[in-house]
Image 1 (cartoon, rainbow, N blue to C red):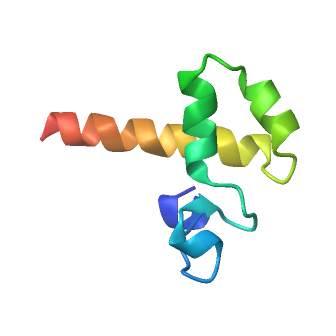
Image 2 (tube, rainbow, N blue to C red):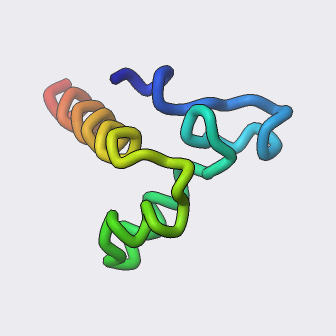
Length: 72
């Protein structure tokens, strides 16, 4: 999946905060859970409108972006 397939940014939804597509769940919520050492299972329990595939794919896209940027 691509970032565009995973993330929606729309001023009409959560004031333009990046959210998981098809939800009102901010992407930052997943990052906050990871920073707090909270398991992905708990994130998925807290936000049932986000699928495991969406969460894992977002992390994979983020990692690929970091690696590509590091390569220059």
